[in-house]
Image 1 (cartoon, rainbow, N blue to C red):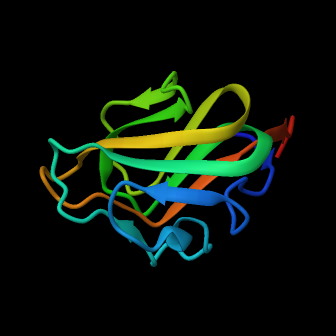
Image 2 (image 1 turned 90 degrees about the vertical axis):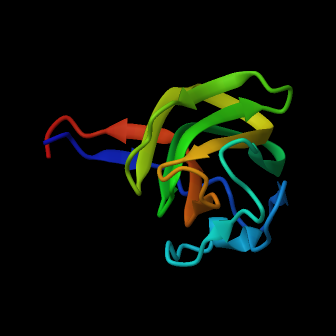
Image 3 (image 1 turned 180 degrees about the vertical axis):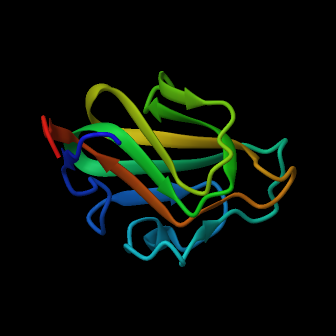
Length: 138
């Protein structure tokens, strides 16, 4: 078993400006209810769905958590499309990723494919957090 890690609260909240390439219900991405979801509209595995998040000011983060998702391949990118992290084959409803500390105002989540081919893409919670500490012992 891994040691307990301490994380910040999600940097994504009601103060952010969230732009969706399709679908509505951006609030579902941060409402702390993984049962409510953002879902694309008219999408398939040939269409890239982009969720752009503007925090309003630069915020530090180095962890990504997706809950209740069917997204298989995705990238987290800077505003200029520089890739921070790329996941090629997510097969889980929950996906947790670690990467170098970023301090950015705007990020994009690019969703390419779904676990079952050509479904609408969905995400129940999208969290960007900062790792504070890992306990030496549980």
